[in-house]
Image (cartoon, rainbow, N blue to C red; front, side):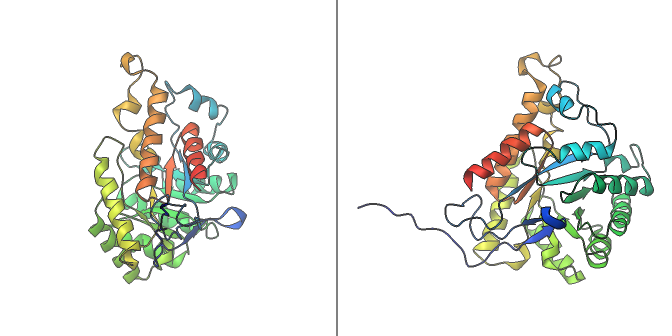
Length: 314
C-alpha cells in the first residue's frame, strides 16, 4: 500500500506585518505551516532576505568581491542604492552604528540626514537598527520616524529598557513598525510582546527579533527558541507569539573570528571572504529552517544564495 503524506497545516497562523510603501512594500508572516514547509501549504508570503548597509564603510580587506560590488560608492546613499540591486534583496537594513557615543558619536541630525538620503536612494522597504546604546537609539529612532512619516519603516529594535519610548513614538505616533528584541528566550519574547500591546502598539505593527548567534557559537539555543516560539504560535494559537520573526544574521556572523581573521594571519583557513560568506549562508539557512520570516545579510553572494534557496523551496 502506498504512503500518502498528510499535510500539517494549523488553524492558527503567523500574523502579517507590512513594511515599506508602494509597489515594493513587503509583507512578512501569514504562514500556517512549520518553517519552510511550502509542500504542506503554499506560502502566502515567502521568507524575505534583506541587505545590511552601515553608515560606517565596511572593512573590505580580504574581501575583493564585496569591495568590487561597492566600488565607486562614495556616500551612504550610494551604498544603499547599490545594495538594493543585490539579486534577491527585498529590503535594506540601515545600521547606524556610527551614532555610538563610544565610536563616532554622530549626532541625531546627522543620522536623520543619512536616513533621508537612504530613503531617496531606494524604493525598497527600510529597516533601521541603531548602535546598541539605549539612550542614543531612542533619540535617533524617534527623529527618523518623525522625519520619514510615509516610509513605514521597521525600527529594529525595541527592548525592555526602551519599548515604551520607541513603541509610542515610532508605532503609535508615527505609524511605523517596531521590532521587539529579546535575548534568545521565549518567555522574554512573549513578555515584551505583551507589554508592547498593553502599551497600545497593534500586534500587526510588531516584528520579533528573538536574537541570534553565528553557527557554532551557541546556535542551538537560537534554534530551540525559534522552534518553541513557532510551536506555541501555531499549535497552541498563542497570539502573543504569532508576530513574524526577523533575524539580523550579518551582525553576528561578521563579528566572529572565522569572518574577521585575515588569510595572512590564518593561512590554513583559506580565503577570508569565502569563510565569511559560508558562515553567513549557513547561519541564515539555519535561522530560516528554525522559523525566521526574514534574515538580514551583508554579502551579495550570501543574499543571492539564500534567495535562491527560498525560491527553490517555494
